[in-house]
Length: 58
Length: 244
Image (cartoon, rainbow over all chains, first blue to last red):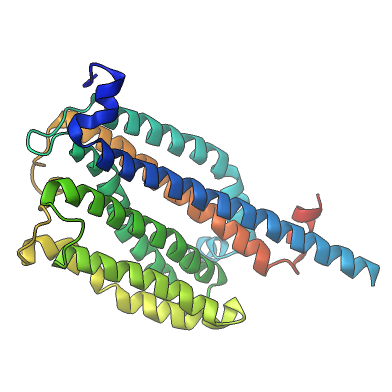
């Protein structure tokens, strides 16, 4: 362990802003990307099911 | 060999195989990433010159490396779709563009945030940074070109040609820190000689990079599956799959 306290970990020796900005944006954009793709999958499945249902009604 | 090639080109076969791998790969990739990040943030020693800002390295280098490797994935898939008119390769090329653009953005962003405390500036128009920005525009170009056509089948050729032309940029990015004077430090991880990085700093990097590679594969497989469903919904196997 390189840090003595929680405060020291957050401060990152004065570079806290940069380290946490980089890690924060990386985590946010990766999670957002995953969520967009999961929603895309759901909407594709929904559209296909709807298409099949319409077909069977005709 | 050719039977294998044909199988690999079959969207149905790809869908089944990736369904089998995806749960395992997702868990493994996340595990590697979390272990590597905790290790890199808490246990790796600070850099003697850069202090703790060097911890951005653990995001910056893996995202940049996979952004470059991902470009080859896209370009090779583009070449395969041009030569053999393989539908699966066309899909992989377009999905690789989306993931590659996100990784390139992250490499540039983490680079800017690392540059501020280290170089005193967020941005420089030097060879490495500028050629990385061109990489981002190439990825976005492929995405935009694909969206410019109404049917995905029509945009394949144009996207593949753009991907292939853009490959000239990759060796330029890779070699830019050696060829031109730059603020960007030269590579510390080397394939042909000893790396100039301490092992205590190196191992978390290896673990995170493996995690990023695995999750890259997961994302590419998952998104390709979605695109297969979108394009193949008229086939019987998709019908069975969706309605089961």
